[in-house]
Image (cartoon, rainbow, N blue to C red; front, top):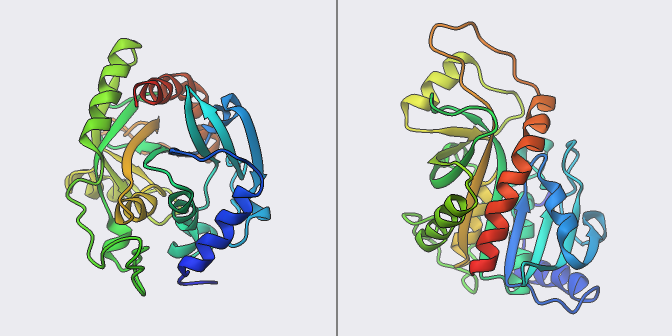
Length: 280
């Protein structure tokens, strides 16, 4: 299992993509659990299965189709990840963030990341959308940082600043678009855990105590690598399940529940993403 990749590895994968299409993407999109239908809306799209791109991790999770789509969406040249791989599937941090590096080599300037997340904020309900204003890299703090290893100076600095992980201008666009589309949009802090087990009630209390509003098993490694390479990021979480009311018995969480919530969330998130793309 590769722990590190070289610039040549990213270039090799990018060459395979370039050989399939003339699209030069400006915007990258990563579609989380249950949100892959947006990729079907890409015009003049060319789909490349992940297993046909050297070094690309292949998702083994339901709801992640595993294709790279290049084409146009709302007038923007885009590269869309229809599903992602996760650390809990057995991949290294370098592997799950490899596609972000390839998108950077392809020329993206902006990355839009979506995910399905569990609600920690007591005001959240299943089906809500959350604008990610910051994140807690709990996995990275424990040593699993995707930037571990030799630094690729041509892509970014050894010690990248993460004080503005999520771009303020893109957040402003998302707020305006959501308001114009009459889509309620919460804001909050996303925290990444390694998974794949869902959280215990004590876990949830701890996560809320340290300032997290939503919890998931992705996104933060990808955003870390994107920012290292100077790519602007917009993050959106779809709240798939809500925190049980105080004093209520624990509620079992299932992946099927996450996918079902995704079906409710897709029109809302799609409206925001499409609107932002139009405004870029």
